[in-house]
View 1 (cartoon, rainbow, N blue to C red):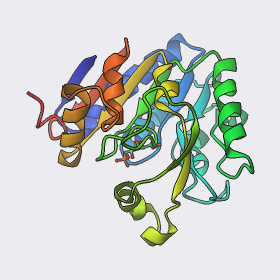
View 2 (spheres, rainbow, N blue to C red; view 1 turned 60 degrees about the vertical axis):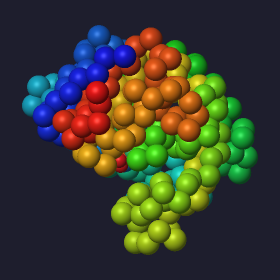
View 3 (cartoon, rainbow, N blue to C red; view 1 turned 90 degrees about the vertical axis):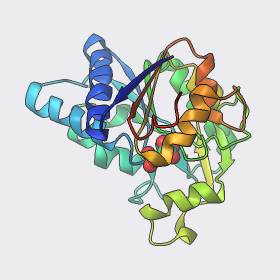
View 4 (cartoon, rainbow, N blue to C red; view 1 turned 135 degrees about the horizontal axis):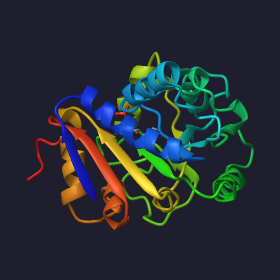
Length: 241
Ligand code: F6R
């Protein structure tokens, strides 16, 4: 595991964009995309490189990490819509190549299996962007998730619903259930790129990289992976020894 500590969130975004752009230029790349606030600056930087320097994503395929269950596909906070709005609609990746689990599927277990098969059929994810929850979750694998889990329905903790309430008008609107790639799914990506910024993530980062590998900190599964880059700012690194 390589840990890169950069002074500010803007520096984190530049380093992360360098890593993703490297995969894209070596392409065709299968990108694993995360939502949440952390990767937004990285997406903006990649959009800038596309617009100003011609970085092309035309041969890429992308897979979202997770999705809320029950939000209509065109709901502004559905992750399908967030990824389009914040990233993929501004680059040249074909819309049909931007995939995500379908949180409106009537059979969610079957949808999980379909999504696993779609990732496999694309040859697996080359680089998976990850944020980390304050409770150590990656994707929406909350504490207690099996380290070998595949795409499936999960129940969000109150902590995560509170953390995400800022995107909705009240916590009551935050869905309770999600479809998320499992820790086993994420671990099959060839390169994991975990980003974290701010003091609020310092404890989770400490547990993920210096704590034991254990289901109570789902991100600790990264310690078992052969190719992980953790890019964090000084504040998120503040509890590392
Ligand atoms: C998002 C996701 C989550 C977030 C995490 C951190 O697709 O899977 O694991 O990465 O909740 O969110 P932010 O970046 O908003 O702090």
